[in-house]
Length: 77
Image (cartoon, rainbow, N blue to C red; front, top):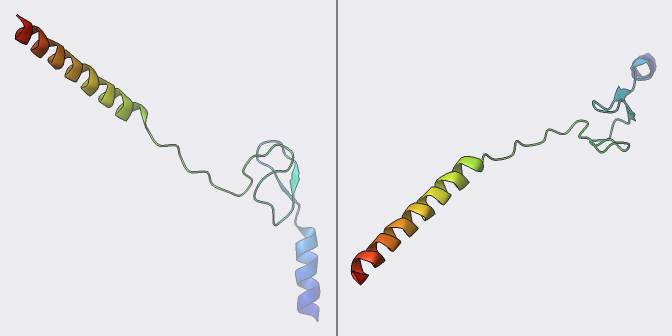
């Protein structure tokens, strides 16, 4: 019985967790802040790096169109 009482007193002694963004109190089962919507205990995945891929694809398209235009000019002339 004393083990349950000491566990309960330790639980009550802990201060409530706070939202890392707005400092609102969080209940133990919350993963997201109810006030601001920030991830309280959830790790968000990093967004993929699409910029380099888009630039490379655009460069390939532009070069392909240039080669096609040069070929059409050569055929016409």
